[in-house]
Image (cartoon, rainbow, N blue to C red):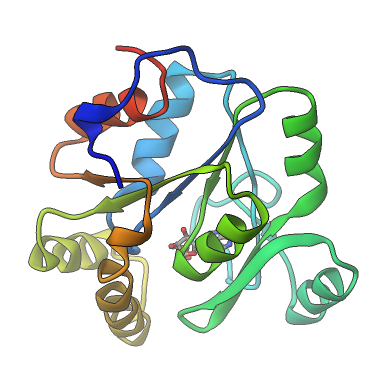
Length: 196
Ligand code: 5GP
């Protein structure tokens, strides 16, 4: 594991696979959106999921929203690079577009949970995996509740899962504490070799 201070400032290598993980509610989505706005050359993978769309989420933009049957058929056809169950739903990364963008030399970014990150580590050992963690567990709970989109049961499952995920930070190439978005974004850019 390396800290942000040890990151190089070289140009982002083309065709490299980057992965961001961390517990639900830690702010990965916001961080990634800000990163992509500043670095549009990065291609973000769109995952498949059996979860129902949240208000404002658009199919094929935020996720490919699939039925359980559709998801299982995609798995059976070898169409996913990795997949995992998370808080009662299945999530997975479509394989073909990731391979295509890497072959074209674009930096590829995955934003996925822990089990999927472990699978990707096996298939892409040269990928760079970043773990995003909250300043405290209490702050994480506050953020998950503040989102106001999940049922109490879903919140409880996400918090339970978050405790497990937070124990895994030592597995990652780098750990980023997301206390302040602007600061976290700068550190993420450094880690990815994107300069300041
Ligand atoms: P959410 O339901 O909040 O959009 O996502 C729940 C969790 O699933 C998040 O931790 C998110 O990073 C993760 N996730 C999203 N897409 C994928 C994927 O393709 N594979 C895996 N393994 N996890 C994913």
